[in-house]
Image 1 (spheres, rainbow, N blue to C red):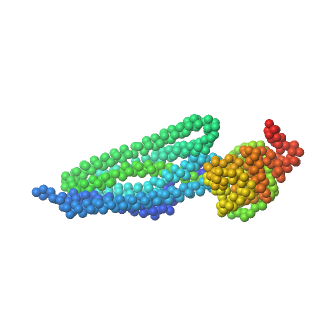
Image 2 (cartoon, rainbow, N blue to C red):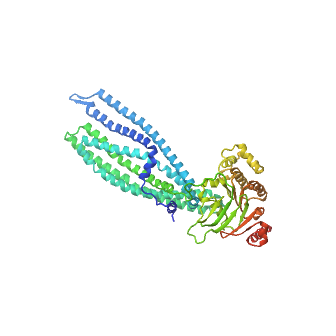
Image 3 (tube, one colour):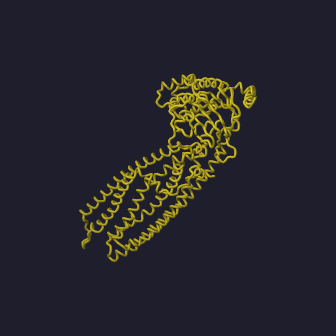
Length: 600
């Protein structure tokens, strides 16, 4: 399945080729600004039509022939030159105003749309991000949104101004010399037919080029994020070849697109040349028969250029429109993608929670069509305030339980309850405020340690955040950082060690003060000394709240009130460490294997 086909599957709709209605809805908030730009363009077009009249007056009446030679009507020439000067001043002044308005409107529309797309992306469910490359999402929010500017802001005024020039020049030519007008008239339907054909082909070619650009961006983002793995596995050259192949596909697509549009300028040049030929033949004939003055012919020359000149401009305009339309289709496809996990009407918002949890006959598979689900008819009750450890082999569904409890995915059978409420009946925001999660690889955002702590307590002062870190016993590590709590953590926390990142995340969870705390491999991949500090922080963090601890390192869960063993997505046994060891079941086998590994 291609990336675009996957996006269509996730959106549950096909790529929308009918853009007009949605684009009109997009520009509705700035419609009066665009109307103002169109009005300015109308004035500018009017100034274009006035200038040939000044020149005609100079040619016909500014120079007076007599038997003694030519005399100049200085007064008339002076007035006509002044009129031309004023028309150019008006054009320059209004053109500047028009450009300012267009830029302002473009920035407003693009920024509003980018914020809208960004907000929509944040609402999408986990499955969308599981199946969509990060680079493709970046491409939609960035380049595709930018490509809409010529389509929805710059394009309409330019197109209207172009059509006004053609129509206005045509009317004036018809009034001055009907034969010349009718000689040029066949160029219009010929041009319109060509525009329709080229526009359809151009949109398709531009869509293909944009798709290839998205693939290049997606691969680039993945390569930057995984550069250490590429270097560690010595795959730089192979990855370079793949990137080069993607660029080759993009080049070929761009060449096809340029080739498709490349026929339009020569075609318009042919129409332009034919029009000039008609002007010479028909206009010259009119002057010879004294039906036109030489000044009127000069005026007609300007009008013919105004009438035929936009033909070439239309090619550039429709190429921009094709690119913008292809980008709009992709942006709207993203906006049409609805989150799978949504709040039910009238969803309950829990003001507080005791932390009592129950998994009742829960069944779940990441692929609903899979023959073997990840979680199979699992029953597990957790008392409020209980400290439960969940253990089991890798890939048997332990972490999936966390995803289901926090509703990043919904169960396909059975139910999960918090304080007796089905989590599907609870508002997601409230549910996730009551259930805090600390993962093995938590994410820190660029900024300082305090900035990351403040995510959990936006209204807290620096002193309150530092006090929380000290209450949790994290100050021994965090206050040794180069700038203590003002230390920049770097992208994703890359400036901190794994243990330092985990301590920041534990303090962040402590500040959030959830009723239920889930620790998913929170102490793995750290040294023994750091693990001891984290264990002390965990004991303080878990006090007075329900705690679910998922761990491979069984030494970290001996002190749990109860241990649940998950295998093949099913609860196979449950009890205290001593009871399970004595029973000689699955947990005893896991613990024995762990001790053998520790003693090697």
